[in-house]
Image 1 (cartoon, one colour):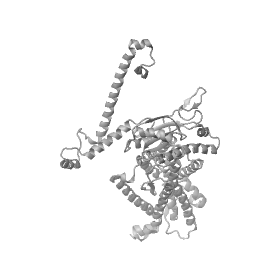
Image 2: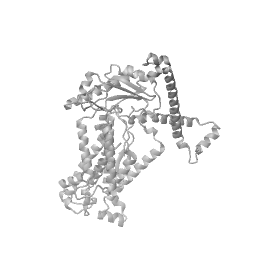
Image 3: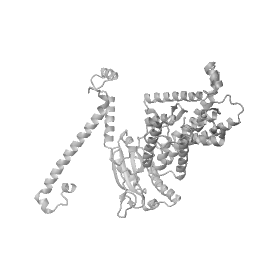
Image 4: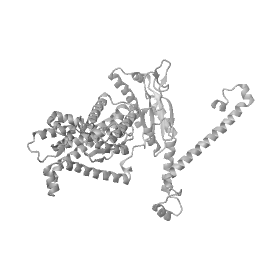
Length: 548
């Protein structure tokens, strides 16, 4: 079509006969019709989406009290702020509809809500000023008014380490080559007088990449990416967005969200106290004093468990914030989640800035449950030891023996530290030190947060350890397994946790600035070890029932 329009590639006879002019005229008319149809369709979609929330069931516009008050002040003129809001919503919807295929879904929402647009001259400046002589040889690029992609490959001095690594040192060198090039680009960007406050760069895998199948039967690489045969898998590309693009900030949360966070905090405090109170329900002395004699002076016996569970949850969040400060990651205010079984499930801690690397994301994610699980294991062992050595058990909480077999990990610890407790009938009440119940709550809280689902600590760590592509099916399969386990009715804690996760935490989290560089074998192995411990904590001990 381009050749016909330009009159190129045709013989002299064809040109003289006027066929090229006739075909070119038809193509121009057809292209014009298609463009008009596309623009009309796009406008209808934008208008219908923008008007959805402003039209009632009868098809008329909905007006609020505020609208009538404002109209009485301004007359019949439209509200300027409402027009700006509508224009902003239309622009966002138009961007979502026209999202290019090269823009990853993890960045598409940020691009659509970008408060500013970037001119074509600035995208060209990125290629001319930043990428030239940077080690990243740009082979092609594309852009919109809010995002740009720069495809390329490393020169031989860098790409030599992209061949299949045979040793761990080769793999480290492989990652360092990418990190070095992108780090240099970031340094150039920060020192650029015009782009440093306009552009933000991301290093991600090329989502348009597809493996090529050669004649020998081997999968190779797509031309135009990395040097052919030197890397298996998608080549990295650089995505550029406006500097103003950032995750949701605390100040942007509406009143409803803040009110819900306050309610969840108060409810978590109540359920934690209820957990501590229920631990003494089978204690005959406590039951007689509170229920029969209406003597509330016995209630302070519950405080060690109440304070202990809150302290373990606080240590969990402290681990996140210490790691976040180390890696310069901004976190939002944690929102506690109530639990009828163990008092609290921990907290939702949102990311308020893009982590610089997958390593930073991994450390922030894993530090919380790692600390709380270690402390909980120590409390479990200490509680069992103090129970065995204690001479007076009258003031201890009393729980059914089935609690010892509610978890394979807990049952294994009890079998080693206090084996006589494992031969008691499941319905037999057993006095136990409060530290054991604090450790039990902390262990289960850490275990459910380590599940590799969406925005949970385990989901973030999984995405950081293996990348976004493998993490998506792992998260989906884990969510399905959680749903199946919930419907089986084996564990009450899984039922409630599954509902919370499905409503609030199932989606993947925000991306890191560098999503290509891995985290190393040490961190991957530590995550696998913690995941195994979490799984053992959630499955029942042989002869027992699921977690409470």
